[in-house]
Image 1: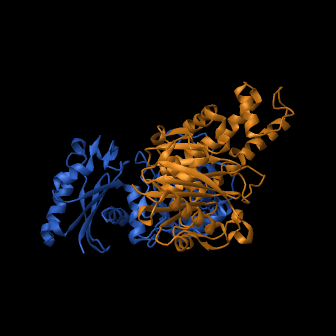
Image 2: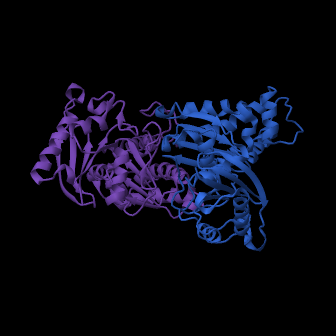
Image 3: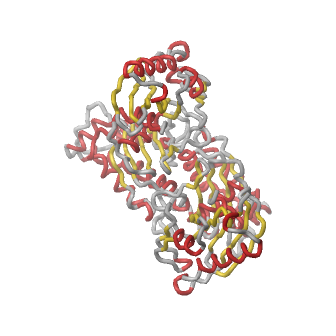
Length: 310
Length: 310
């Protein structure tokens, strides 16, 4: 057994975990993300925290398998980030800098959404699968595609950007990316609130959503209480997402599709809204693909980051 | 240097090639596909042909890297085919049978469309790329997705079935697969003929397509002569294909997209019809993805089959 560190860099905190290469999580903690001065201190802070944890636990360089890091930006196969607005970085060779900060330790770098997918595959809802798609329904829609147990990072580190699949060629409102009809406009937390607002602007029967702060949570809370309008909104969300997942399945043929992110906190009630349109539109060979909820929550990032080392 | 054989099993002939592991094609030939008796003789015929070529060329078992075989059916990672209508097979462990027929020789099995993609990556239009998508526009639409230099075979051997991406949720006519709105209904040779028929059934100006046998070839021949109606048909085909490719690119982020199959015989005139809608709908990170024509023609299958051995 060796040790590895999993690091998940976010805009406000850096999550860190100490793992065994067998997948045991010994300890997790957080440090602040110091984004000032173009994020110059972020990597040195991580290196210092790794070194101090190694000292505390009596872990030598020889006991270390490496440090994996998830970054909120596209990352090239060589571990280079071209731009990461959230942490202030411009061009940065993250792998090289990290290995200079921790001599003798191997570093691996990945995009945070891709890395979270790898985490669910290793220790969460995708355990035992080597072909899997993870969809993260948060403020935006992110994702990670795993084939043969490997993250599909792509030629520009932009693999798995599944929030920007076009699901509606008739859309006129623009997505944040500048295109129209992106999955993110319907299936993110923001997208569900938008669908709810549009639905309530049309003639409708009585609904408990009326006068409420419209959010993914208020919609799914109302669904659980049997509200008809909320159920219609959930059906619309599910149709866009389920159809997009069917189109993804025909490309990479996953064994399991894992749904994570804040929207997935709605729990198992979410799944039928996605499964029904998925089954209606999926290719016969993908009928057995299981759609399941993520299980690692906020730990997916550190788990996947550590997994990159293996 | 070692030798490898690439074998491409079709419904009427088996194409075979003798390669060096460096990618030199020394010789290619064909044998008949004997589909009678549930295709019982297909693998023994291939083994006999390999043995006789080895004898002819003085190649010993020690000089052999292996035999790669492309099969017109989904193939599991273990080299098992569950059903291949075209060659009469039911369940068949192709890898195991082939290795029993050629003791000491390693066999690798893949789906024919996926294998063709690997061939273009190795020796054709995708040379030097490790992230690539190949789309084969023939009677149907097939394809192969390559990430990190590896075919994405998927959990059921059904990866890269990109003809069955849904590109039109309003379609009422059924695809051969039983779904509606599949890419194959618009972008295959049959699909283009269908679009032409539908267009000519509507009011239209004078066109040289009138009274012609409507096919992908006649449409693109008319496009080259400046025919307006044919150009409209090509634009409709290109919009469906270009948009589908943009949705694929956002998932696997390929460096290059290779267009092959009979329809691609239209030549470079085909590309702008695909590139324009691709650029309109693609995610900013995929703007540099190149769309190019396949270069290996019918040899892509044997090349990719041999490449599986490396």
